[in-house]
Image 1 (tube, one colour):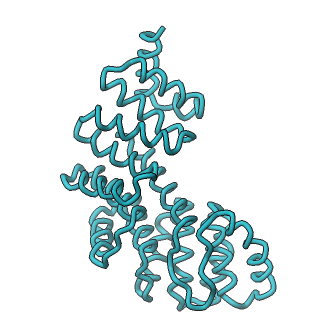
Image 2 (cartoon, one colour):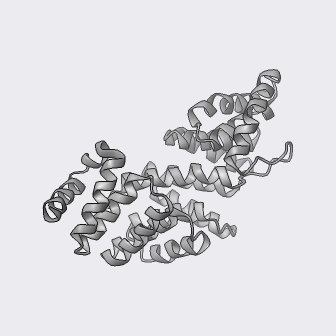
Image 3 (cartoon, rainbow, N blue to C red):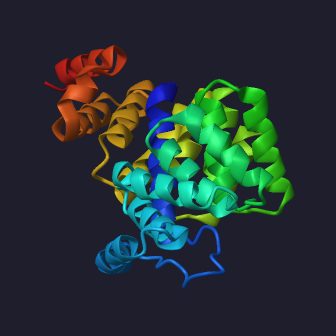
Length: 278
């Protein structure tokens, strides 16, 4: 397994999920839109509010939340820091900054902000998910496991949170990883990362056939991600189908040849499959 590649996929799941799902309810403002088009439409007004109210944390945090959910974490950091500076006791401000920093892969400072947010009462699923993932990426496995377990004890049954936990369990070779991966697919049957993670769970059991089936579904749901095609080629090759492996590897290389060729094992399998196909 190439865990470094797949934790990046978890990051994409985490950021993408914020576009389509509401995170922390804000008692002081209208709920954030749940669609990216609506978020883009709101952005100009939020930007003006932040300029016109430079001493209020609320418009600063709102702007940061919208930018983050649009995948613009780098742009979101400045208003998120302003919100914390203006309201250092507000749990939601620390939670937003923590999520921004985690999305920028700044995990150590993200942990500081997210733990501060939780001490102040932010116990929503996205804060838990960002904190647990940040612990994983800083190799604090006990803290990550404890954070995921606490989130589940609160009844959160969310594909984004559970997908991170499933990947964590897969990476540690835990026997219950398959159950969580299957549950994510049951919750979100048309979400590509759900099938990709279940594919990883099968691959961890050396079941190339079923790993291939679910990775095929991931490519159907999200055909533009090179990593899905590369893994599909990997599993097809291991399943003895060199023609399908060649086709999948070729698609991956067409989408991102630099990243594909940087992985020696994938490139070696593609070369073998290419020779067999020709």
